[in-house]
Amino acid sequence: MWEESGSLLAQTSVMRQLLGLFLHRRRLTIDPAREVAETEDRWFWLFKVRRVIPFLRILHVQYDYEDAGSFFRPFRKNGDGAERFSVSLSLLAPWEKVVLFDFVGEGSGYDRSFLERVLLDLDRTDLSGNQAGESRQFALLVRQFTGKPLV
Image 1: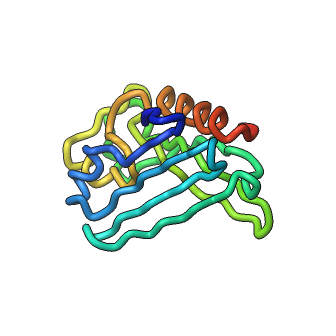
Image 2: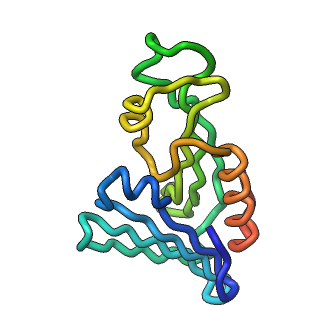
Image 3: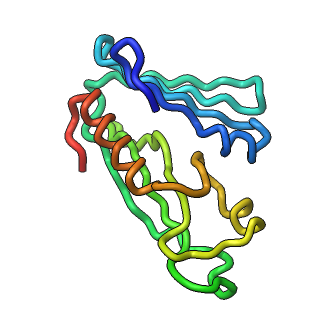
């Protein structure tokens, strides 16, 4: 995520794109001057799906946490399983939730093999790192740029 010309921009991590053979990429632009949030998903290198969401339709920015668990839970050595932090826009009528990005990674003290990391990386983020801190920072930036409350 970065700021450019007064807009907030974010994109699927390069690691996730690499692991997914560049089959999917999401790009987000939040432009306070135009009062719109734009998502662009590219699928299979060719097909683009663009969505423009006016700020007037946004009810609030939603920040969620979920213990994503693990298929490999019986085989793990110690600690927590995978955790998922999600940043979304909740829209007014018709009620809809637009997920901007998910931040997924291992919980504290969790040992995973390389195979587990590849198989569990089902979302748009790096496998390791500070997903709690990065997702919170992203949620706060979305709130700041849209002017909508964070819940």
